[in-house]
Image (cartoon, rainbow, N blue to C red):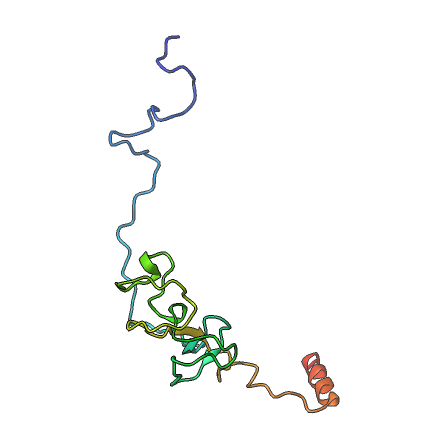
Length: 156
């Protein structure tokens, strides 16, 4: 073999590269992109959010001003417990994000922790006033529904 390569296939040692290691047939870069205009129009927020506390057991929305020393109105579990707390994290030491002096063994029973803070969730509001179904009136009888259907396919 008179060539220093074993196989005759195109590769990184081809002569169509310039001195910097770039191919000569590559397109030049266009430069930096312009910044995104943050003052432009924004899309309206169609989905409203609801901030509320929920029971850790049955996920019932608790009303504002709920006494967490009591029990859940639906399933009667204790609300002042570790699983209802905002600092509850199963992967940390003593399963709490705050430095607690002693471990609370049972996490779903009522306790007297001074660091308790009710867990608050943010969810989508399903009863939004912006929904499209609320803007179209429902047909009052079957002939109204049939007339609306016929109007869809009527030729002008």
